[in-house]
Image (cartoon, rainbow, N blue to C red; front, side, top):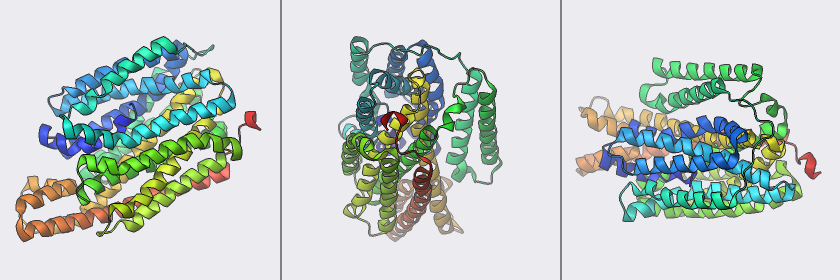
Length: 485
């Protein structure tokens, strides 16, 4: 449920434009308010889980998430929807690390823990991948608020099951709270994501973008310095001395970077370029979801046989192959069948990677640090995914706009129409339909070609980032945990 909300909104964005008159910038913030708060609060939530009880924080997170879902369901305008999405992100941040640390505490045998984490990772990946399908189904039968209302019965079932079946656990030596570290980490992530997302709109050389990026980097440096010298750090930097922790974290972030960045491209390609409905697009992503879930269950067995290094590297290499196949077929004559192999490779690779890297992260920590360790692991997933959408989306937008701008030079195009044309392929196609005739047909053709050029450039950038992850894992990730040798 928590990870499904990362992607379920994608297929509803055109509906929000129609029903709430949302602008392109507002659509970005509706999506990113959730991820930013989610990623920013994970470390804080992990330390609170260790201190006050993992079951207790898990229950609180479900309540907050359910309340945010109800608020989002009945939002009448864009600004309240953005605020409620942020509250949902806070609930998600409380739920994910406490839930994973409960799993880690209950299954202490390495083999059992690996299998349990494989099941956990399968639900994470499945939630991410079936979001477009669920969104398409709901929008086909109900109003847009149903994509949030669907969370409420799941929250209710989760509360009942947790209160009845889950034991309480906490660290025997919890660390004091670290509010300064929390503020610095949230501020750094927020400013960096803002700069990446808004770069194409404001201009990469604009004062606002440069200042936000510089401020985010400065806060990140300040966070590291504070955590290094604090006697009760929110994120003990000593964890990163272990390659099983630090390299696995990096691999996890890079893999999800490619997964969510790739899905961001594919959902637009299926709807705006190939003309599928939200439900049709979602159904065509379903094979990726199914293969991801199956691979996650198999991954833990492979880790026991050949080690984390081989499985994690193979997962990242398959993702690179999927991105490369997608880039090769990204032409004006693309079909779904041509794009399907790339989707399947990305799903297979991600399913192998997530359990292998997660088991490596948690296996490098003491059980008393499970909350912080789980939160750090989940932060890698959320920050990697947020950066994937932000970076790949910005590369796409920058290349698309640079290709479309010459079309508008010297033409008397109304400001509203020009903003729609440059804002997205969907906006350009809407203007083309309104214009009609040869002019509309020419605009649509140029917009599609520009979008495809941007897609290829974005995929090449994703390939470079993910390939670096393959080399890092092969060079530095230990094959096995000491406890399994």
